[in-house]
Image (cartoon, rainbow, N blue to C red; front, side):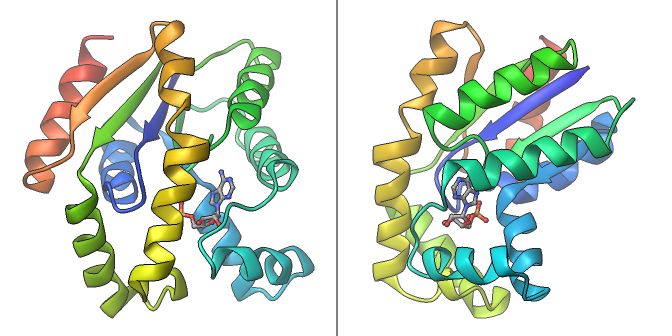
Length: 190
Ligand code: AMP
């Protein structure tokens, strides 16, 4: 199986590149942000609780997202592999993911980390906010909270995967096609 953690701060292009990768490599896209937004749209209890945190740019509890990924893995047996987008975001989530995959006799093939500076991230997210309608893309303050959460809780995961020799850093600036080609080069050399 090919299991990729597509990593990077909010606005790095994980969602955009995931959509391309799933077609090129025939993978399943698992975005915890998308699944949570679906729960919000369906007005489930989980969605209503998560919305209060998401609208402020704060991470939802680990057990919530780990449970969601567990059921997605169980619902998608016998597939080529997965792109994990926006998950894991904490060390606890990364350890849980390793354990879940181990039970399925597979593992993470690579963490591909997209590198984009804060100035560009804020610009991209405010621009996306005009069409996405996402409450957490609407103000600089919420976007800063999201970037802070990333720096404090999520960025340390790079060293978690680096220690396991599974970290690949990719320049996330340039055209969608340029970035796609850089990611493809990493995957094709795994
Ligand atoms: P995203 O679509 O990945 O930018 O996620 C939007 C929001 O959903 C985040 O700001 C968090 O509040 C929540 N979220 C998504 N994925 C996770 C995760 N793996 N752990 C905790 N919170 C998450």
